[in-house]
Amino acid sequence: MNLPLENPFGNRDDLTYGSYLMVPELLSLQRCVSTDPETGKPEHDETLFIVIHQVYELWFKQLLHELDYVTTLLDADKVHASGHRLKRVLKILKTLVGQVDVLETMTPAEFASFRSFLANASGFQSAQFRELEFLLGIKDRVQVEWFRGEGGDRLQARYDAPTLWDAVLHLLGRAGYDLPATALQRDVRETVTENEGVQAAIVSCYADDGFASLCETLTDLDEGLQEWRYRHMMMVRRTIGTNMGTGGSDGAAYLAATLFRPAFPDLWAIRAGF
Image (cartoon, rainbow, N blue to C red; front, top):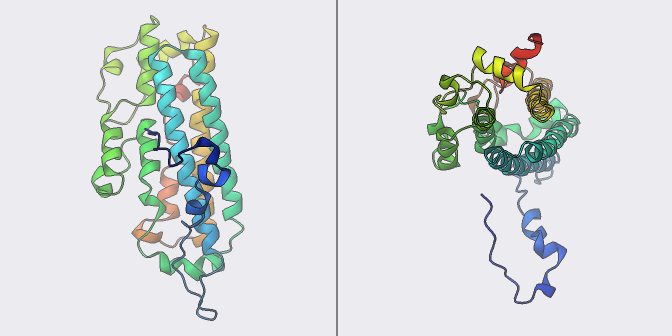
């Protein structure tokens, strides 16, 4: 949740672009750890690596912000408004995929020039991305205990909370669609799995343009997440090949194992049901 900051200005007229966005502070956060043995300065490409990943974290923050609001709208039976907000989420996912193009301008040799300085730091440790997975119903890929002290409390809260898909199911239930009790009363700490009764209800709801549009937008979201996973995996494979990732992860092999596992499996299972 984003809380308003205390206004540091006595007069709002003193507010500037730089002070409002905290630009000096923002630009001070790119702290390289590498050292070029010839110049004694940080390796040139480390700055790009830091900026890209910091921007990713900012976008993850915005995705969580938007999807939390979508959940609130679904809980209030605002189908059209929730779909509108999901469109923004799709645009952000496209932006995330586009940033991979920038990272891929870095050759394996350029990455290797500073990779050893990263020690145990790894994108695998992004607590916000794990929060995003949990919010979307993917709760079987990481142990919450791994993040104690760095986003662990937030991640635990996400793990214990209902998912976006649970909000969709309860919306359909309130609209009168026949959903199995097992789906509406499921353990929200478990990963979302296929349910034939849910699929029958979804097929029925496609007769309503509003619900059909919502389901298709959610399918777009799922596809967008999978597109990001694929591009991310290929970028890692292109950069480090079959080497292990930093922090001891399996690198591209781990990322490949996450492909083609949808967040909303029922939305894909119904495709042959019309």
